[in-house]
Length: 267
Length: 160
Image (cartoon, rainbow over all chains, first blue to last red; front, side, top):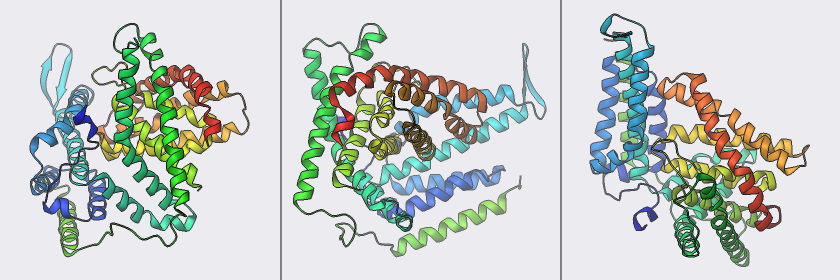
């Protein structure tokens, strides 16, 4: 229980990747995710792999945390690889088994897609491993600010997200408490037919909703009593600032993209 | 946006995340049954829960290992489906009919997720559309009586 109370995957640290402005990280990852789809040769994939591994080692996040994040997707990666092996019929036959013929094109495509997916997961999970959810919220609020012009409630959504992040651990504790309380009254969540197990969720959800909404009511009242009135003229506790290191990282990343396009089609 | 709407949606999103992390009545190794997916039905009772549900999906996916890809497509899937049901709610007043429509719309829109899988993993589009839609339909169909019962106790249309 205590372990699962720590929401997200954030691993505290003091590395360059941790210290970067969250906006820098989000922007770079955004463009990385797009450029991954442009890679089409061994050389261009290598550029991307080197960049991802470099980020990983600079972040100094212990390998086991990264591997833990990847556990649920191994199955998907292997499944995809095998699927491409069977379906793709290009290149020469390299292996023949019973009624199946495996083509070299299938192996290459299977590898390419697996590596691409692996890179996507690795780089995006580096963001959540090195950035606190609150930093991500701040960055999103800042980056979505232009949407204010079309009257999209950016500030409100960011505040909503902060409130939500604040209450996730509380509500998780509450969920745990209520499910224990109901279990002690004889509700069985773990055994029995599926229909009964689903029904058992109702006595759990009712008190959960009631207590969450009660908290919401109290919080809203407290905010109104203190005169909360939205985004206009509000100052911030944490100000985001682009530093020299952010600019350096942008430049480095621009070089990586240039290198990728140079090595495209180069086999 | 009123303070009440803002705070209630924040708490709803937190509840979405907490429930999806903790309550899994049965889970196979890879196919997981997200109870919180049923929260999608709440918008039938009160359209003001729109942002809370979307935010719940967003935060849950932010922590999911599948990463950002899921984030963009998952949020788009929810936002589009919820908007359709809010529009339909103007013309259809029967809540049970709306709940069924909701289950169907969410499942049909799984083509967005199938497209994501095609893009990221090159999985065949129709195959993933059918499998993901079937999974979604089961969860939401089970959710219909659950959320209907829940509404009788909690009265979602009254709280906001």
